[in-house]
Length: 277
Image (cartoon, one colour):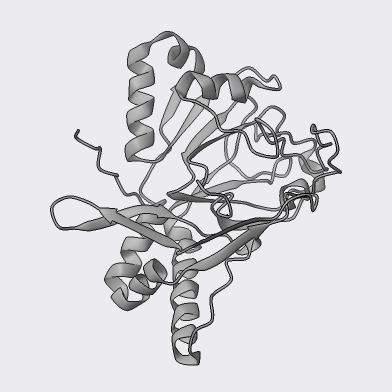
């Protein structure tokens, strides 16, 4: 078995790989190319996906099997709460339902196993007519960062900080959006695995300020060093030179590796209109 090696990228130098929906469905070679891109670059944008509810589930099943959560088979991201589809549960709440900006994070680090590849389908979305985003009529933007690339920058800059993020376990938690569950997972921000030869390589990244990521009891000196390491990782991740910016068009579907890439969203302006992802 020859595992594909990740191709690390910086936002200032990378371009988003794009595929056409019909070609992915009809041509096995295109599906293979898409799969290879996801396993090496960690993301791809599929254009021309039908703007129908549930299409993201159907397309996901073309690529692999899906894993449902307590949110169901898919999670509707609107600027208002999504009525629960599960009998007996109340209205679920999430930061994504608000127009507030969302910083860089991975999704659901409080679950084990953590979600792998995720799909975001823009069913209803504003767009800038000339392609130069943002614009007055569509200010909302999405952002992607290769956290493997960021982690390697940190490893080169400060090996001790990198080591701490690999070794110190933090507690991620979530209440299911309605207080109906208590999801907790304890793991370090960076997870390593045996790589090529004797080298240990990154396997996964977990990073989400909105999911707790509480540090364990440590000595004051070690705790200060840990927070310093995590702040530096976050500073690098938010550095504009490493960030890829994109604005969805209706019918776009973004597939990305949730255990590798961090994603973020700008605030949503009142003039952006309805948004359904």
